Length: 364
Ligand SMILES: [Zn+2]
Image (cartoon, rainbow, N blue to C red; front, side, top):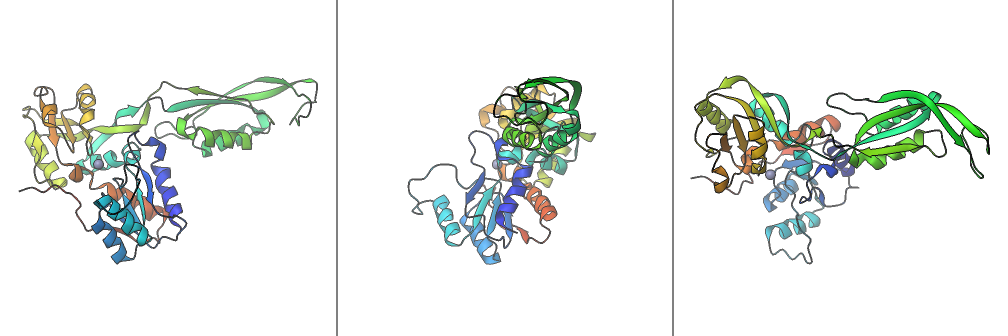
């Protein structure tokens, strides 16, 4: 299969518009028309990782952290990023990164961390806002099923674990076709009344153009009428962090020790123990300390993330147990998401986890 097909599969799962404003997720380097010879999965891209791909004979590196974050006026190999860029291009290696789009996607990075800890009843900790639209259109009775299905196929009608969600109301539409028109029904110059269904459905704002194209293609009218409304609803399936519950409450020290083991953490930093069992757990992989207020508001017993600054520890002694487990450690299982996705979509693709631990932080 071509690399571009693999990229499409990754972006169906973690659409690029879900990424945060500062990010640079997506294709980093390379031409995706090439046939994939294998995919190396990793957290960070370093020169050693590219060497590993070269040794394996793989021409695709899929990472969580983007290699490139800024614009370049020259690439001369003066730092490791530039050397990686040069090495990848020289060796025809494509580099693709799914970063905050994968953090914010349903089933993404934090879902994987929650799975490792064994959390149940999980939901997004800080849901995306101003990201949904309501689409309303008016379709003749006979064509309503076709148009509705076309909208669902274009990504409309998903709410939680339900798909094909719509509301349908019978009514009557009117129109008078003018000169040079080709009306599907009625006569040019005469007022026409048509029994129609008003179809309402919901969609992520970033799918607007795809949905409208599908609507126009499936709708029988020359000039289909449709309305788009921005919604103030939060998007419960997309956003940052996760909150969930342990099946049985755990002693907080036992819980921290278990986390240390699961994520192979050299040193777990935490604030003072609360002397009560842990049941409700909020978490965010990587640099997730910005979600601490959300974790406290959600009444979590503990908040786990990869990095917390010294001053951020202050003032929460009686509010929540905070635990810092390392950026690399918290996100290292992200490659399992890539693996599961690609194995299912491309059973014949050679896939390997990198054997290199790219964590630049060591513990004594
Ligand atoms: Zn990260």
